[in-house]
Image 1 (cartoon, rainbow, N blue to C red):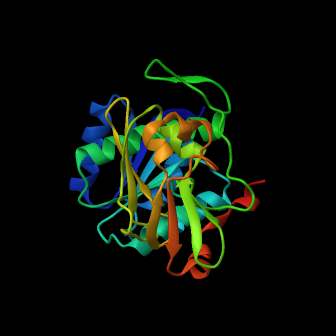
Image 2 (image 1 turned 45 degrees about the horizontal axis):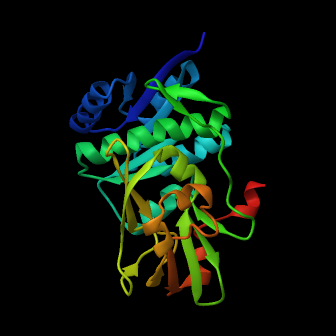
Image 3 (image 1 turned 30 degrees about the vertical axis):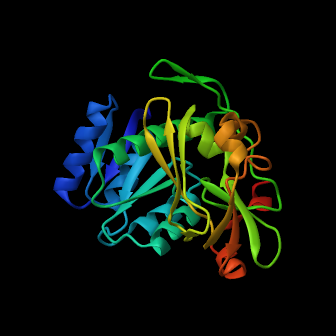
Length: 267
C-alpha cells in the first residue's frame, strides 16, 4: 500500500535538513528526509508526497536532474528548489524545468513557511481538480491557464508581447489560487528595472504570508496597473487581461522568451 506524507525534504547538509524539518513539523505537516536524490527516488515509489523541497547542489544527481527524472516518470508532485548558489539564471532554469518555487539560502522561517503553504495548495489544485480542505479551509481547485499567445515562467508569472520592445506582465491564475485571498500588494516603482528571475512584486495573503513573484522578463517598468491598487479583486477576476501588473520596455525580449514556456503548449 502506498503511504502518504505531506513533504519530502532533500538536502545533503544535515543542519539544513533538520532546520527545514523543524519548520515543517511546527506547521503541522508530516515529512520524510533524504540526503540524496537516489534515496529520494526510492521513497517516492513507496510514499505519495504533497510537496518536495530539494537542494540544487546534491551529490551524483543534482536538483535539475531530479526535476527531469520526475518529468520523465510523469510525476506531478510540486517541487521547491533551494540553493546556496542563488543566481537569476538558476531561478529561471528551476521554474523552466518544472519547479514551482525557488528559495535562495539562507532563507528565513517566513520565506520557507509561505512557500510550503503555497506549494501544498498548488499540488492539490494542479493534481486533484475538485474542492478540498487544507487545515479545515475550503479551497477551489479550478484554475484558468494562460492564453495561447502568452509565455509563462513556471506557473508564477506571464508575459504578453506587444511588439519587439513592449510587453505586459502579470500573475498566473494558478499562482493566485495557491496564495488564497490577497490582502496587500507591494508594487515596484515606475522607471525601476526588473530582471528575469528576480522579485518584481510582493503579495501578502489574508494569513499574513508573504509571497514574492519572479519576473518573466527583464526591462524597465513604464506603467503600473493602478486599477489593481484600487480593486485587488481584479487580479482574481481577470488575471490575464485587465489584471496585468506592469507594462515593460524589455531589454532582451526575444532571447528571454526562449527561457519561458509557451502557453500554447498547455492546451
